[in-house]
Length: 317
Length: 166
Image (cartoon, rainbow over all chains, first blue to last red; front, side):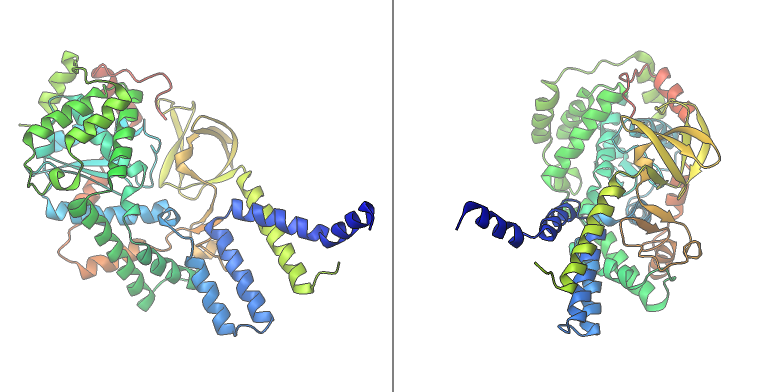
């Protein structure tokens, strides 16, 4: 058999359409988004139905399950993140009383909302908002979407505005990376997205609303339990610290403020405390990471006007 | 070589998906995915804010500069919007606005108010009457304007890195 004959056979075997199919399939996988996975599950179900391999009911169930497959926390829209965040925030502020000091909360929002501009995610559905909690625990929480809570105990770890900026920037980092949403269990998301996939444009009501609320409630529990009890993964805390350093550099605050705050926190944390001692890596290990990024600690020097307003407005007294 | 009919159909559909996914990535039309965002005259938060864009508004992206997009808004307005406020999905505000059956879980279309929404929050509140949302509502009213932020940073001698604001 001549080379030409072999070549022709190969050409006819490798039909042009197969090449197109292969290239397109790779393209489809490369850009595989939940929408594409939806479509592929639809195709599979349709073929199964047409060839008689599946009953219409079985095909329907494959389509339904396929729509939920591949959906992660990233499929949660900013609007849904906003509603999750509101309820997570409500749970937090019902456990920790709000510090009802208008001037101090205004100062906190001036600082926090200014810092948020310098993050990689300055815009969220409802924006960033900050509130002091009237608690001596050393704690801070960020609800998805940008509701951020700082305890007065945490405030007392801050000797200056740059240290407080570091606390707020760390919490903004959690919002930026959507660490709260990542705490939602996959099974919870699957059930929510399956309900959403079966119902299209129509309004939810009755049992659907109840089922969706159950998935919602479970999601809130997943997030608040992680925040308040187990803490985020070490890698998430590192990511939030890294964002904090970046936000501080961009905004003009001294990133050494983060180290200064952690040094003060180390003095104040009780080893068996239910606050940051329980949910965060030790200040020493965080300082070690930060040192890698910004070099050895250098004392923070503060313009007098910045220090005066911090002492006056932050609500420490 | 003859390809069986169902396989040929499958090839066409997969090609269509691949090509449309590729085309969607290159698309220049985007939607506002936050409640509101201002149209600024420069690609910076310091930029003077003009018209306010609202959730679901469609904008035509002309070009980008870092994380900022220069957009055209129907009606002839032009300005800059931060890309974190934009989505490549088409956001449909009310079910009545889209006559076809919408697949809101898809990547190309998002049905506003679908999923975890105010109805779900309402149902949650009914079941948990001990959880009070009043401080959350108060927090959302704690808004600081761009002008106030500039004054705050200046008064504290905080000097942002050039081009620092994202």
